[in-house]
Length: 440
Image (tube, rainbow, N blue to C red):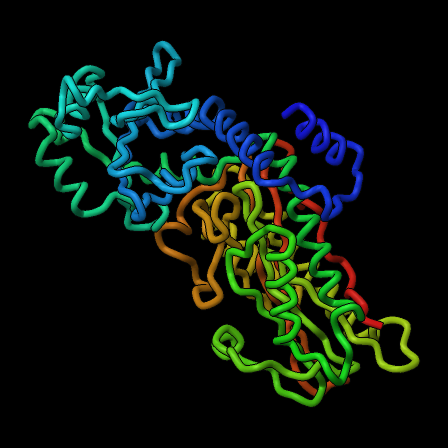
């Protein structure tokens, strides 16, 4: 474990490039995942429980139908919940103490202690009620939510069984644990951010390889070929993708696709030619974290050593929109407020913006403040009203439409880079693309 952490710390602080050979074997990954989980239980959970004003959080789930929050709390060797899993977290604000208990026959890793002796009390539900009575909470949070699927993990069956078994004097204390669940999912620790830096670096490296002559032969290779290179590359590295990648292109001889067409086009791809502006949407999963990146590349024509100036200038407008958006981040500001201010500022600057930025981390489309959707530029009720907190991560996803007289058409500069919001403001987790990649 010490060797693993030393490697990661050196890479992070000395800015040593990450190489594919440094991806950990499964056994070492498990050690690190459990280290991350232990730190999250010690540092994240007490803070978010105190912030939410919920002193007891009850999570109930079953094998193969896991609550999305419970999935993020299982140790590395638990690939699923077992039977019916019940977790109880009790926060004593006065003593600043967190109890982490499981109404299960065994401990759940090193972090959650079994609190059920089935020989003494065969009924698991009654054992749960005994715990509730013992701690006498003021509020009991359950994972049901109108706004976040991630925070809506309790099944109808388990909810009804819980409420039917719960003593009458506690029923009016049951509340939605939405804010608590979102806080747990969205908050990053220092160790997670060290790993995230390297994970985004791996993502960028794979994109650069995909948009190179190693993979693409103009006039022969299709966009679909590049998609499957990305999928196969990740599999060969022992990693996973959390969504199927996309690769598309824009060129002077074809009209700009609508958003709907771009998001639903699953053809066999187009043959890549010199002069094409390529675009990819790609993300990977590693050590419980997820990335999400969109970048552009230009296929050089014979005699060219760089992209045409008009494309370089168009790309700068994408960076400009990123700066406008992240410049409007402020702790406590809602996603909808950030969206509104950013769109207004961008339009005043002469841009044609579309912003659809989302939280990122334990899930790809994660929980936290939604900052627009591609088809909801007026704001997103519910998740868009959630405020921005520190120590959270985002996929800064957006596009700006640019009119190109040289091509007699509009194009979209579509960018997505992973960023962190903390006490010192916003920063990109592993830089951002500030120039077109060039395919020679």
